[in-house]
Length: 257
Image 1 (cartoon, rainbow, N blue to C red):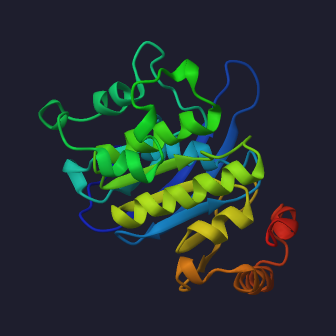
Image 2 (cartoon, rainbow, N blue to C red):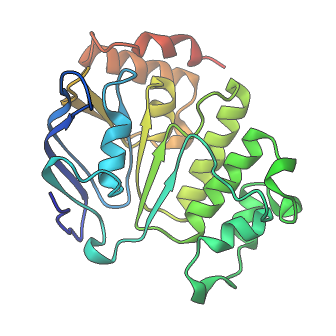
């Protein structure tokens, strides 16, 4: 169904999403998936692998229109959407700066991006090519490219997966630094509870397939106050509300640095 424009929050009302393979039994991935993210807030979709989180993002990005239901994006018909995927998908024949500026509207490609590059630690790497970057640095470039267009809606699909824990944490800190300076409505897919507790204002907890919302976990504590003790308290509160959440225990050992 065609997306429904909305000027305020991200609104998701997906009645059903079914994959119909060329051969085999149709697979229902999403059913009665309903949630909202307030304008200017950072939310995480948390759920077990394969439950339909990335499928949800594909629908919201307009990449998959074969579903029943509707959704509304902040900004409605003039929404500026940015996405950061698991793979940075940079053009190998373009420099770091060229990759970032090519994503911008032609009339804004000369905008001063010094502050953005500086925040992400890319100021000295603007003339390098993707092949000269580590995966962690390439993902910084992907974040820069997303924020450079000043999006009204930012989608992130497990952007720190496969990174070692110290690198992932550094990128999480950088993401929040950039987002705090340029607040926009954000929805990130993850199956890492620690990551969701660190980054988000709201965690939308999904069931196994076919995915629906088990509930939401709102975090009102400022991010700068989420020290190890606060994170442990948040973890206990989360488990108290969602005692059977699959995969949540995986993050227990990640809470203490």
